[in-house]
Length: 335
Image (cartoon, rainbow, N blue to C red; front, top):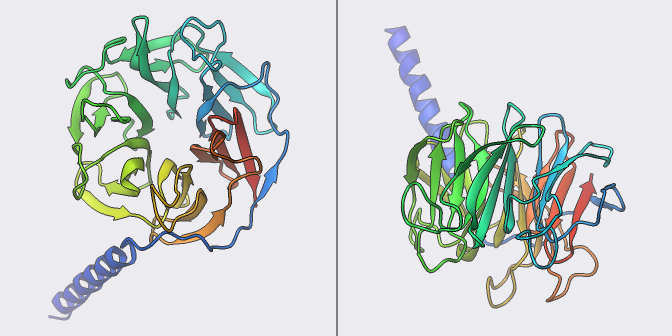
């Protein structure tokens, strides 16, 4: 009898905990006044050439920083530059590859085997609109999507933007960067490139996506999608079940969740027109309660022509790397 009562009490406690967590993770107004314990590090990177427009930055398990740029102002189509960089924690470039493979860089991710996945979100000259998987030394292993052809099918992409991974190695790819095709969704592939499933659809309703611009996955395999035009972070479980929608992190261009359940969001577009009451900048919080703990204002030099960073990542020490497209730079912040 006591055993049954104890089990029942544990069930009640677990239910209460889940309920409390769900309530704590509710959306609330954008946070602009959280403290800023970070400082910007100048001239941290040493690269073989100046960066072109940079949207994508990621950090691997060794704290090496990977950057995917757009070669130059005219993009990578026909360019000789290699757009993928690997830098050590000390900022020195270790690798630079990918020349001739892309049109315009967007998402970048490194899997647990060290393979590099890169999303090419535009189409030109029979290239682009694909996700390319490289070996750690830059050899092309596979390509997903039809080159140069956006589409509605499961074997083609409508402007792929972000890449992340589930704990079993499956690849999460989001697509739908402002295209007229109205195909905005989350796709799951095996690491061998086999299409497995998709979820979400284009729209403004609960669980839908209007402009998925980046994606990250936490330790519990919850998927966080930066729905930029929707001014929200949408959260799903690995099966695609919609869990939450957060507006407190602003108008998200980039999202990153680390192994300590901290979430980092880059807001490069909020203003009185696109997201009233919210300022551009970087917001840092916890996925456990959805609360914003820190706010980093935009770096110096920001204006209409050079907005703040879009891409974002953090290493195991909490250092933040933020990729700014028009500034052609990756900013580094330390606590």
